[in-house]
Image: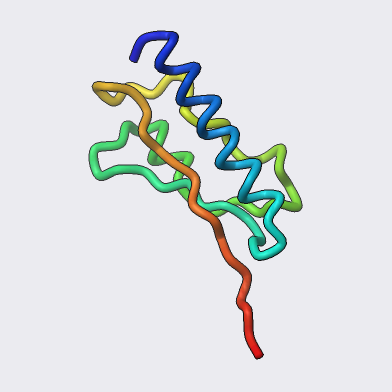
Length: 83
């Protein structure tokens, strides 16, 4: 992945994370990785809570060795909404 593409993806992922963190319906984020993820991305995969935002890895991950670059993404962790 060239530097320009990497930076565009970083800006996109940053906006996605910001929207998830600012949502009152979420309690955190889940980092999702593809089946062909590199070891670094596999290590980062998991649940991160928004009360500790400094622990949430910045995507795309620098050092990702996947051919084509890092395609890990954030998914919202939604708190239970009930009656």
